[in-house]
Structures are given as C-alpha cells and as structure tokens.
Length: 380
Image (tube, rainbow, N blue to C red):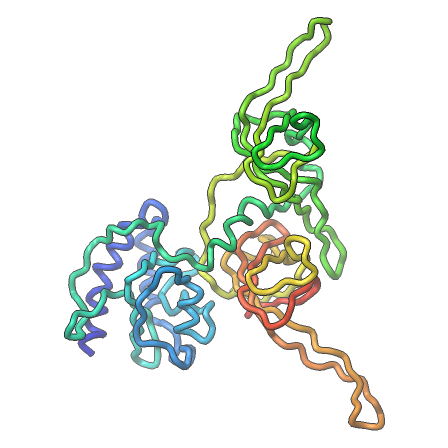
C-alpha cells in the first residue's frame, strides 16, 4: 500500500518533469491534461492484463512501446487506456527513458500504469522527483524505428501519375555512362526551387484496389538520393543559338542505379515521429494492395500498402488485424462430399505508420503465415 501511495505522490513531480522536457515538441493544454487525467482514472479492466503482467518493469535500452505494452496487456493496442491518454488530443506517449520504472496500480477492478523512480534499498518508492537531464532523443520509440525510418522518405504515393512529369530530370550522366552509382555525377534540367537535397524516383506504378481494380494512387519507384552541387545556366552559344548548361548532382545513396530520365523530388522535412498504437474507433475493413519491394509474400517487420487512407478514417498509429481466408474443401467424411468453407482465422497485426488520401503504409508487427496482396484486414 505504501508503495502505491508513494507512486501516486511521485506522479505529480514526474509529470511536470516530462512536460517540461517535451513542451517544445508536444505542447499540452490545461484542458488536454485534465482530459488525460480523467482517462487515467479509468485505466483498463484487470481482465485485460496479460497473465504474467509484472507489477513493475524497469525500462531497458532497445525497448519499444509496443514490446512493453505486450508485457502488461493481452491486447497491446489498448496501451493508451492503461497509460491514461486521450486519443483525440494527445497522440504521443509520455517520453519513457531507459532506467525509468513503470508500476501497475491495481484498484477497484481496474489497472493503471504509473511512472515512478527506482526503489530504495528498503523497498520503498523514492520520493525525490527531479527534472530529467536525459536527451529526449534517448527516449524509447513506439515500434522499432530503424525498420520504418527509410520508408518515410522512400515510400511515396502520388494522387496523379503525372505529378513527377514536371519535376527536374536526369538528362546526362558522367562520361556518358548508362547507370550512375553512389558517389558519381549526373546532370539534370528543371527548376530545383532553391533546394539542395533530393530523392530520385522512376516512373510511378498504379496501385489498384484488389477487388474493384480502381486506381487508388501511384507509388513512385525509389531510386536513391542526390545533392545539388552546382546550378546550371542558360545563355547563348558562339553561334548565337540558345545554350543550356544543366545543373550538376552527386548521387549520395542508391537503392538501385540511377539512369537518364529519373525524376527528382525534394527531401521532405524530417518527420520520423510514430504515433501510439491504438485501435480504430469505428469498424473498418480492407485489403492488402501490394508488398513494398519485389517480394511475392511478406512476413514480420516488412512493409505493405493497404487500400484505406485518410479519406476512410485511417490514421497513424492504427493497429489492424490480418485475416487468413478459410480454405474451401470437400467433406471427405460423408458420402455427400459436401463443399465446406472453413472459418477465416486472424493471424497477424499491422501498424499504420504513414497515410495518404486513399492508401496507407503499414508495418507487419506479427504474423503466423506469409502475407500476400488481397489478404484482408479489419479493426483488431
């Protein structure tokens, strides 16, 4: 009991410390704090806790919010309720750092997660909250960020397949080479709009709804990245005819070799924030459109596109259930040989990390069997 009271007393100081640290990035109004506090008072039913949920857990380097959620909950996407977040207003978790201790406060048939300090040698909670000096960049991430980081720049959906037609393009290569690799030079024409860093894309391919075959958007094929090193110019040659000197770029990284005709798009501002895993608040269903890359099937930690986007209410952080269609078989145990359709079975989870108007990208968090285009998903 003393430990629980100590944790509750600590929360005020720790919450102030966390808020002070995160204010520049995650401003929270007084109303939002009040709403979150009300949610925190509710918590989750004890029946939602994992069978072996620990009473406390010390955060370790390399942990993720999703992994920690799985320690405490049967359904990790209910983390916001356990932690006391209001989904409509506070999208990001409180920053959690290695070495911090998470406590389960169980009372009145509900469970709430509290952030505390390490225990003193006699087993009591230390009542000495202080502002943390830890770099916010050391905070644990929602899901393994290294799996997603490349796709924030690489995976792009265009509403119109012609959007890249007006973008700067590669018109020549160093020494007339057919392909250009990392560290080599290429020449481009087009308005760079004062930008210095670019992504290279090849002709976008249409993404079609698996059922209706309607085009939902165009996925640009990512080639690599390049830096502008010298601007071009326009003038008149010795013969009086117009003369164009193209701009010069250096290829800084490649997913595949660059070629003439590849198009350039500016590198967007760094936006690697990941939202708290949570279930959609309304029923939703759809299908896998494609697997990112050239694979025929996908497994855990791979990326897929789905045929639902912002227009359908999909948002970053949504957790979706993957379903395996039941096989159609003949009843071999009876003379009638009746046709049987086995029940569909849920066999995995998706985490939506990037949304476009009618398409979204999702990470396969866990799965039992290979995922392929056309597979179904629903709310979990």
